[in-house]
Image 1 (cartoon, helix red, strand yellow):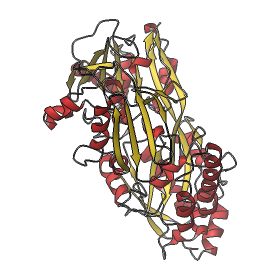
Image 2 (tube, helix red, strand yellow):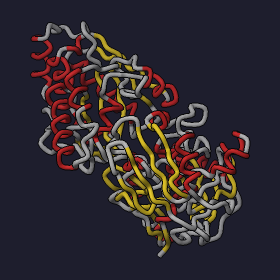
Image 3 (cartoon, helix red, strand yellow):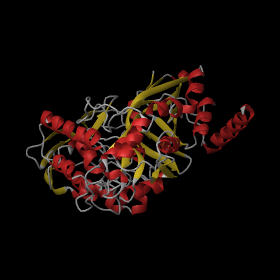
Image 4 (spheres, helix red, strand yellow):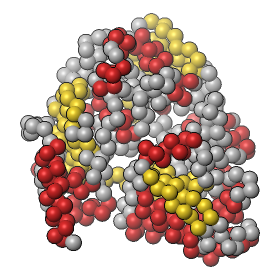
Length: 510
């Protein structure tokens, strides 16, 4: 095995050297990321993996900064919420796009109108939610939504503002590969599958970033990322695999950086009448059949924390009173017998095999635990490019998925993941089993116009208890841990963000 590892390591090194372009100056930062960008259109990919690239080239009206994810001004210096439907933003003056054009309210209006175009946007729900966008003057804009959206401002850090003039004048292909934003960095070169290079925007409104040149090498394969780090070819590696953590920790030249992740991993259940999972006793039995502590210990190598709910502690609606059901296969068997399934039943467990840490192995473990209580779970794991369209189709019966809400508001999570599917108004987009519960829908809808933080928090905590304890909408598994590694000798100052974005204006050298 040792010889095999060394051979694979040598091959990985050759691959890294072959992928790399000319070596950058010592003052530059080279990063190996686990996911490449799909495009440079900031609205065409709403995944965290895509948004983290865009956050370097573009700005939103607001931004989240630091390890706590605090919401702060960006292209808007302040904002108001004068009534349930209206959001008024006062824009920053003197900001320039990378092409020299001035940033004004016309760019904001253009951006939000563009969100509703399915040809260029994956933020369709946000686009459809807007009733009107009024330019009051060049630096004031009022956005009115069709229905109350209490978390509207909380989402403004990931709606990136585009230059109206250059976007309209260029062809769509050029927009897809050449970002023109107001961000801290300008794209200088993108060789798909090899590297992305950017240089500091010296005229950035927040001040020129400390690191002047950044090269990102998207390397999906974990052993190849590891080889790039050990060889000194890269300064930072994202997505350190749990199986290589100890090797990196023991290397005196390397430093491991970790933080509890906001992303929870859980199992989504259907409740279609006539199916076993329509019975709460079956749902409870499935929950109690899974040994989550063993999953954390053996599959996650200790790099996860058990979850009792989907929202994480910083999220409005997180309920500290909700506790995990105990692992108890014997009690699970009794519940199945009471529900009329003493001999178990057949079910398909779907999930991705390239999206979350150890996702396929977790699914395999879940299937084994369920088999011990008589439930035959047929595994159907597949690439995320195939899996997620199946989720949004709403035709699955049982699947593994991960989630954290960028708005830090549980209401948005539940509207997307648990509300009965309604494609016309965008509810239940990620409710992949078409779960339906009228009482939950009613309570959730009652929060739509709650802007008082304490009232909202209390009601969403009540909703959370209904979903996780009374109804068992999902079976929670764990919160991931985000793992990074850096070169010690480079003196890199790096603090991971809660959203896992790599925002290079926040990184520096000592």
